[in-house]
Amino acid sequence: MGRSAAEVFGADVFENRVKRYLDACFQGETVQYEMKYSDPELGEKDLFVSYFPVRGSRGVTEVASIIQDITERKQAEAALEIREERFRSVVQTAHDAIVSINSFGEIVFCNNAVESVFGYTAGELIGRPLALLMPERFREAHARGVSRVISTGESRAIGQALELVGLKKDGIEIPVELSLANWSTKEGTYFTGIIRDITDRKRQEIELARSRAELEQTNRYLEDATARAQDMAAQAEVANAAKSEFLATMSHEIRTPMNGVIGMIGLLLDTNLDNDQRHYAEIVRKSGESLLALLSDILDFAEIFALKLIE
Image (tube, rainbow, N blue to C red; front, side, top):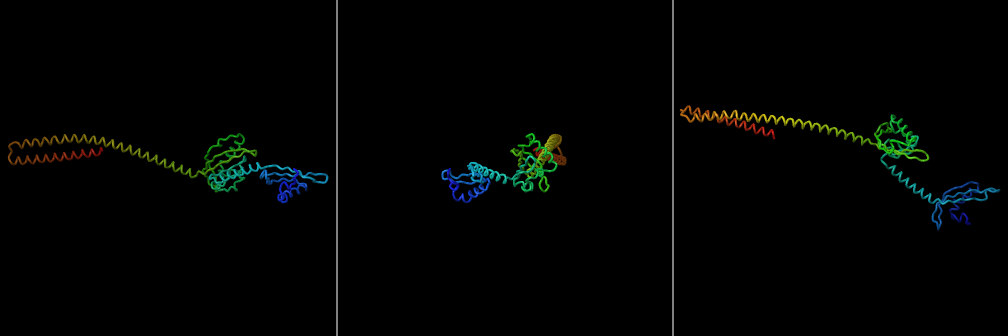
Protein backbone atom coordinates (compact mmCIF):
# COMPACT_ATOMS: atom_id res chain seq x y z
CA MET A 1 0.00 0.00 0.00
CA GLY A 2 1.09 3.52 -0.67
CA ARG A 3 3.40 2.54 -3.54
CA SER A 4 2.98 3.56 -7.14
CA ALA A 5 2.48 1.05 -9.93
CA ALA A 6 6.00 1.76 -11.15
CA GLU A 7 7.34 0.93 -7.68
CA VAL A 8 5.26 -2.26 -7.45
CA PHE A 9 6.01 -3.67 -10.91
CA GLY A 10 9.35 -2.01 -11.61
CA ALA A 11 10.05 0.86 -13.94
CA ASP A 12 10.73 -1.26 -17.03
CA VAL A 13 7.59 -3.40 -16.69
CA PHE A 14 5.52 -0.33 -15.89
CA GLU A 15 6.72 1.60 -18.94
CA ASN A 16 6.56 -1.31 -21.40
CA ARG A 17 3.33 -2.95 -20.31
CA VAL A 18 1.44 -1.70 -17.26
CA LYS A 19 1.27 1.96 -18.31
CA ARG A 20 -0.33 0.97 -21.63
CA TYR A 21 -3.08 -0.95 -19.81
CA LEU A 22 -3.65 1.88 -17.33
CA ASP A 23 -3.94 4.40 -20.13
CA ALA A 24 -6.55 2.18 -21.82
CA CYS A 25 -8.44 1.93 -18.53
CA PHE A 26 -8.45 5.72 -18.13
CA GLN A 27 -10.00 5.77 -21.58
CA GLY A 28 -12.92 3.79 -20.14
CA GLU A 29 -11.86 0.20 -20.96
CA THR A 30 -11.82 -2.70 -18.52
CA VAL A 31 -8.46 -4.40 -18.88
CA GLN A 32 -7.41 -7.88 -17.73
CA TYR A 33 -4.09 -9.61 -18.34
CA GLU A 34 -1.63 -12.10 -16.91
CA MET A 35 1.95 -11.29 -16.02
CA LYS A 36 4.93 -12.56 -14.11
CA TYR A 37 6.10 -10.66 -11.09
CA SER A 38 9.37 -11.06 -9.23
CA ASP A 39 9.63 -10.09 -5.58
CA PRO A 40 12.85 -10.35 -3.55
CA GLU A 41 10.94 -11.92 -0.67
CA LEU A 42 8.14 -13.85 -2.41
CA GLY A 43 10.08 -14.94 -5.47
CA GLU A 44 8.55 -15.19 -8.96
CA LYS A 45 4.77 -15.15 -9.08
CA ASP A 46 2.12 -15.43 -11.75
CA LEU A 47 -0.48 -12.68 -11.43
CA PHE A 48 -3.86 -12.04 -12.98
CA VAL A 49 -4.41 -8.26 -13.07
CA SER A 50 -7.78 -6.54 -13.63
CA TYR A 51 -8.22 -2.78 -14.10
CA PHE A 52 -11.67 -1.21 -13.79
CA PRO A 53 -12.31 2.43 -14.66
CA VAL A 54 -13.93 4.49 -11.86
CA ARG A 55 -16.06 7.23 -13.36
CA GLY A 56 -16.89 10.54 -11.79
CA SER A 57 -18.57 13.70 -12.95
CA ARG A 58 -15.59 14.50 -15.11
CA GLY A 59 -15.18 11.00 -16.60
CA VAL A 60 -12.71 8.37 -15.45
CA THR A 61 -10.82 9.77 -12.54
CA GLU A 62 -9.48 6.62 -10.89
CA VAL A 63 -8.62 3.02 -11.71
CA ALA A 64 -9.57 0.18 -9.40
CA SER A 65 -7.28 -2.83 -9.66
CA ILE A 66 -7.60 -6.43 -8.52
CA ILE A 67 -4.45 -8.52 -8.50
CA GLN A 68 -4.79 -12.27 -8.04
CA ASP A 69 -1.94 -14.66 -7.33
CA ILE A 70 -2.47 -17.49 -9.88
CA THR A 71 0.91 -19.14 -9.37
CA GLU A 72 -0.55 -22.45 -8.21
CA ARG A 73 -3.05 -22.47 -11.04
CA LYS A 74 -0.35 -21.82 -13.62
CA GLN A 75 1.81 -24.55 -12.10
CA ALA A 76 -1.12 -26.97 -12.26
CA GLU A 77 -1.77 -25.96 -15.88
CA ALA A 78 1.90 -26.50 -16.73
CA ALA A 79 1.87 -29.93 -15.06
CA LEU A 80 -1.34 -30.80 -16.90
CA GLU A 81 0.18 -29.66 -20.17
CA ILE A 82 3.20 -31.91 -19.56
CA ARG A 83 0.93 -34.88 -18.83
CA GLU A 84 -1.15 -34.13 -21.91
CA GLU A 85 1.98 -33.90 -24.03
CA ARG A 86 3.17 -37.25 -22.70
CA PHE A 87 -0.24 -38.73 -23.41
CA ARG A 88 -0.24 -37.32 -26.92
CA SER A 89 3.24 -38.74 -27.50
CA VAL A 90 2.13 -42.20 -26.38
CA VAL A 91 -1.07 -42.06 -28.42
CA GLN A 92 0.55 -40.70 -31.56
CA THR A 93 3.35 -43.28 -31.53
CA ALA A 94 1.01 -46.24 -30.95
CA HIS A 95 0.85 -48.80 -33.76
CA ASP A 96 -2.90 -49.30 -33.29
CA ALA A 97 -5.44 -46.76 -34.52
CA ILE A 98 -7.08 -44.81 -31.68
CA VAL A 99 -10.34 -43.07 -32.53
CA SER A 100 -12.72 -41.06 -30.31
CA ILE A 101 -16.27 -40.12 -31.23
CA ASN A 102 -18.98 -38.01 -29.62
CA SER A 103 -22.57 -39.06 -28.93
CA PHE A 104 -23.48 -38.16 -32.52
CA GLY A 105 -21.02 -40.71 -33.88
CA GLU A 106 -18.69 -37.99 -35.17
CA ILE A 107 -14.93 -38.46 -34.95
CA VAL A 108 -13.40 -35.88 -32.61
CA PHE A 109 -9.91 -37.36 -32.34
CA CYS A 110 -7.72 -39.95 -34.05
CA ASN A 111 -4.02 -40.67 -33.91
CA ASN A 112 -1.51 -40.97 -36.73
CA ALA A 113 -1.79 -44.78 -36.90
CA VAL A 114 -5.29 -44.44 -38.35
CA GLU A 115 -3.66 -43.72 -41.70
CA SER A 116 -1.68 -46.99 -41.73
CA VAL A 117 -4.80 -48.97 -40.75
CA PHE A 118 -7.52 -47.28 -42.81
CA GLY A 119 -5.66 -45.08 -45.31
CA TYR A 120 -7.20 -41.79 -44.08
CA THR A 121 -5.18 -38.96 -42.53
CA ALA A 122 -6.36 -37.60 -39.20
CA GLY A 123 -7.40 -34.37 -40.92
CA GLU A 124 -9.66 -36.29 -43.30
CA LEU A 125 -11.54 -37.97 -40.46
CA ILE A 126 -12.08 -35.25 -37.83
CA GLY A 127 -15.75 -34.28 -37.89
CA ARG A 128 -16.68 -37.21 -40.14
CA PRO A 129 -18.97 -40.08 -38.99
CA LEU A 130 -17.30 -43.19 -37.62
CA ALA A 131 -19.53 -45.19 -40.00
CA LEU A 132 -17.07 -44.16 -42.70
CA LEU A 133 -14.69 -46.82 -41.34
CA MET A 134 -17.13 -49.73 -41.51
CA PRO A 135 -18.95 -51.53 -44.35
CA GLU A 136 -22.45 -50.31 -45.19
CA ARG A 137 -24.11 -53.47 -43.84
CA PHE A 138 -22.93 -52.72 -40.28
CA ARG A 139 -23.72 -49.00 -40.06
CA GLU A 140 -27.35 -49.23 -38.96
CA ALA A 141 -26.50 -51.64 -36.13
CA HIS A 142 -23.66 -49.32 -35.07
CA ALA A 143 -26.00 -46.32 -34.85
CA ARG A 144 -28.49 -48.31 -32.75
CA GLY A 145 -25.71 -49.44 -30.43
CA VAL A 146 -24.46 -45.90 -29.82
CA SER A 147 -28.01 -44.70 -29.10
CA ARG A 148 -28.62 -47.57 -26.67
CA VAL A 149 -25.44 -46.87 -24.70
CA ILE A 150 -26.24 -43.16 -24.44
CA SER A 151 -29.83 -43.79 -23.31
CA THR A 152 -29.21 -46.73 -20.95
CA GLY A 153 -25.53 -46.49 -20.12
CA GLU A 154 -25.19 -50.22 -20.79
CA SER A 155 -23.26 -51.97 -23.52
CA ARG A 156 -21.99 -55.49 -24.02
CA ALA A 157 -19.16 -54.10 -26.13
CA ILE A 158 -17.60 -51.81 -23.52
CA GLY A 159 -14.47 -53.35 -22.05
CA GLN A 160 -14.48 -56.25 -24.49
CA ALA A 161 -12.14 -57.11 -27.37
CA LEU A 162 -14.35 -57.59 -30.42
CA GLU A 163 -13.43 -58.90 -33.86
CA LEU A 164 -15.16 -56.80 -36.51
CA VAL A 165 -14.80 -55.80 -40.15
CA GLY A 166 -13.30 -52.42 -41.07
CA LEU A 167 -13.44 -50.51 -44.35
CA LYS A 168 -10.33 -48.84 -45.74
CA LYS A 169 -10.30 -45.68 -47.82
CA ASP A 170 -9.72 -47.72 -50.98
CA GLY A 171 -12.85 -49.81 -50.28
CA ILE A 172 -11.01 -52.93 -49.12
CA GLU A 173 -12.50 -54.69 -46.08
CA ILE A 174 -10.09 -55.82 -43.37
CA PRO A 175 -10.54 -57.80 -40.13
CA VAL A 176 -9.99 -55.62 -37.06
CA GLU A 177 -9.99 -56.07 -33.32
CA LEU A 178 -11.76 -53.31 -31.36
CA SER A 179 -11.32 -52.49 -27.67
CA LEU A 180 -13.95 -49.92 -26.67
CA ALA A 181 -14.31 -47.58 -23.70
CA ASN A 182 -16.66 -44.70 -22.94
CA TRP A 183 -16.33 -41.59 -20.79
CA SER A 184 -18.54 -38.64 -19.98
CA THR A 185 -18.01 -34.90 -19.49
CA LYS A 186 -20.37 -31.99 -19.08
CA GLU A 187 -20.33 -31.78 -22.86
CA GLY A 188 -21.72 -35.31 -23.30
CA THR A 189 -20.72 -38.94 -23.71
CA TYR A 190 -17.69 -39.95 -25.72
CA PHE A 191 -16.37 -43.29 -26.94
CA THR A 192 -12.76 -44.22 -27.60
CA GLY A 193 -11.77 -47.32 -29.55
CA ILE A 194 -8.37 -48.93 -30.00
CA ILE A 195 -8.47 -50.58 -33.41
CA ARG A 196 -5.92 -53.17 -34.51
CA ASP A 197 -5.56 -54.54 -38.03
CA ILE A 198 -5.52 -58.33 -37.52
CA THR A 199 -5.15 -59.29 -41.19
CA ASP A 200 -1.81 -61.02 -40.58
CA ARG A 201 -3.13 -62.78 -37.48
CA LYS A 202 -6.17 -64.08 -39.38
CA ARG A 203 -3.93 -65.28 -42.20
CA GLN A 204 -1.76 -67.11 -39.67
CA GLU A 205 -4.85 -68.64 -38.07
CA ILE A 206 -6.00 -69.90 -41.50
CA GLU A 207 -2.54 -71.33 -42.22
CA LEU A 208 -2.46 -72.93 -38.77
CA ALA A 209 -5.90 -74.46 -39.31
CA ARG A 210 -4.80 -75.76 -42.71
CA SER A 211 -1.64 -77.26 -41.19
CA ARG A 212 -3.69 -78.81 -38.39
CA ALA A 213 -6.10 -80.32 -40.94
CA GLU A 214 -3.19 -81.68 -42.99
CA LEU A 215 -1.63 -83.12 -39.84
CA GLU A 216 -4.90 -84.77 -38.85
CA GLN A 217 -5.23 -86.22 -42.37
CA THR A 218 -1.66 -87.54 -42.17
CA ASN A 219 -2.38 -89.05 -38.76
CA ARG A 220 -5.48 -90.76 -40.15
CA TYR A 221 -3.45 -92.09 -43.08
CA LEU A 222 -0.78 -93.40 -40.70
CA GLU A 223 -3.43 -94.99 -38.49
CA ASP A 224 -4.98 -96.68 -41.54
CA ALA A 225 -1.56 -97.80 -42.77
CA THR A 226 -0.72 -99.16 -39.31
CA ALA A 227 -4.03 -101.02 -39.19
CA ARG A 228 -3.38 -102.48 -42.65
CA ALA A 229 0.14 -103.50 -41.64
CA GLN A 230 -1.17 -105.14 -38.48
CA ASP A 231 -3.80 -106.97 -40.54
CA MET A 232 -1.17 -108.11 -43.02
CA ALA A 233 1.06 -109.25 -40.16
CA ALA A 234 -1.83 -111.23 -38.69
CA GLN A 235 -2.51 -112.80 -42.07
CA ALA A 236 1.20 -113.59 -42.47
CA GLU A 237 1.26 -115.16 -39.04
CA VAL A 238 -1.72 -117.37 -39.98
CA ALA A 239 -0.02 -118.27 -43.27
CA ASN A 240 3.22 -119.06 -41.45
CA ALA A 241 1.36 -121.27 -38.99
CA ALA A 242 -0.24 -123.13 -41.91
CA LYS A 243 3.13 -123.40 -43.60
CA SER A 244 4.75 -124.71 -40.42
CA GLU A 245 2.03 -127.31 -40.14
CA PHE A 246 2.50 -128.23 -43.78
CA LEU A 247 6.26 -128.52 -43.34
CA ALA A 248 5.84 -130.75 -40.30
CA THR A 249 3.46 -132.98 -42.23
CA MET A 250 5.71 -133.07 -45.27
CA SER A 251 8.71 -133.82 -43.10
CA HIS A 252 6.91 -136.85 -41.70
CA GLU A 253 5.11 -137.95 -44.86
CA ILE A 254 8.15 -137.73 -47.14
CA ARG A 255 11.10 -138.56 -44.92
CA THR A 256 9.49 -141.62 -43.28
CA PRO A 257 8.84 -143.51 -46.55
CA MET A 258 12.28 -142.59 -47.86
CA ASN A 259 13.95 -143.84 -44.69
CA GLY A 260 11.93 -147.06 -45.11
CA VAL A 261 13.12 -147.44 -48.70
CA ILE A 262 16.75 -146.80 -47.76
CA GLY A 263 16.45 -149.21 -44.81
CA MET A 264 15.04 -151.98 -46.96
CA ILE A 265 17.79 -151.48 -49.54
CA GLY A 266 20.28 -151.87 -46.70
CA LEU A 267 18.68 -155.14 -45.71
CA LEU A 268 18.69 -156.24 -49.32
CA LEU A 269 22.40 -155.57 -49.59
CA ASP A 270 23.00 -157.83 -46.61
CA THR A 271 21.63 -160.82 -48.56
CA ASN A 272 23.44 -162.96 -51.13
CA LEU A 273 23.32 -160.94 -54.30
CA ASP A 274 25.25 -161.39 -57.44
CA ASN A 275 27.39 -158.60 -58.68
CA ASP A 276 24.79 -157.03 -60.97
CA GLN A 277 22.06 -157.16 -58.29
CA ARG A 278 24.39 -155.59 -55.71
CA HIS A 279 25.39 -152.90 -58.19
CA TYR A 280 21.76 -152.04 -58.88
CA ALA A 281 20.88 -152.07 -55.17
CA GLU A 282 23.78 -149.71 -54.41
CA ILE A 283 22.53 -147.32 -57.10
CA VAL A 284 19.03 -147.38 -55.54
CA ARG A 285 20.42 -146.72 -52.04
CA LYS A 286 22.65 -143.85 -53.17
CA SER A 287 19.81 -142.31 -55.17
CA GLY A 288 17.48 -142.65 -52.19
CA GLU A 289 19.99 -141.06 -49.84
CA SER A 290 20.58 -138.21 -52.33
CA LEU A 291 16.85 -137.68 -52.70
CA LEU A 292 16.38 -137.71 -48.91
CA ALA A 293 19.19 -135.19 -48.48
CA LEU A 294 17.66 -132.96 -51.16
CA LEU A 295 14.22 -133.10 -49.53
CA SER A 296 15.76 -132.31 -46.13
CA ASP A 297 17.56 -129.28 -47.58
CA ILE A 298 14.37 -127.99 -49.19
CA LEU A 299 12.34 -128.43 -46.02
CA ASP A 300 15.06 -126.80 -43.86
CA PHE A 301 15.25 -123.82 -46.23
CA ALA A 302 11.47 -123.42 -46.12
CA GLU A 303 11.54 -123.43 -42.30
CA ILE A 304 14.29 -120.76 -42.19
CA PHE A 305 12.36 -118.57 -44.65
CA ALA A 306 9.20 -118.91 -42.56
CA LEU A 307 11.08 -117.85 -39.41
CA LYS A 308 12.43 -114.72 -41.19
CA LEU A 309 8.91 -113.78 -42.24
CA ILE A 310 7.75 -114.01 -38.63
CA GLU A 311 10.65 -111.82 -37.45
